[in-house]
Length: 144
Image 1 (cartoon, rainbow, N blue to C red):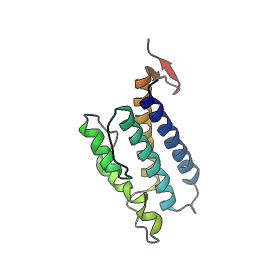
Image 2 (image 1 turned 90 degrees about the horizontal axis):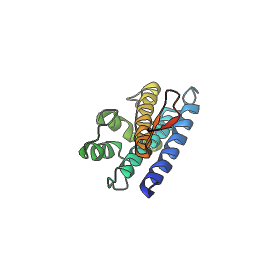
Image 3 (image 1 turned 90 degrees about the vertical axis):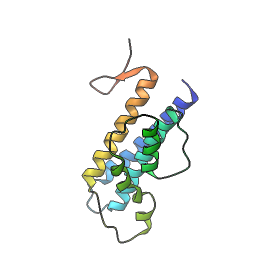
């Protein structure tokens, strides 16, 4: 595999780790939306960056999901969610972590849905780049 593929795979492993943490916290009522949103944002950020690396799209050091989404779209790649959905999650990267007055503009379930769509989309891109396709059980099968 190429160095870009290996780096994209590493970023997706890290994105999955953030998604798993989000999943553990989501059902806990005491877990703050700010903490949940942070892990959702981190998962999405790493998944978007994985696709950028895989497609050799240069990006600056940023937490701005909408900017990353716009870069990807500019290269002719469709996103699994609207850029506006990514923009809603941006504040969870930094702003909401230091703000005790969080005004939620998104629910836990909406966050979960966006994370799952973006992560699944990025994982599919990685599988396609490796020449493997996920089967019905999510296991990768080599293309014939």
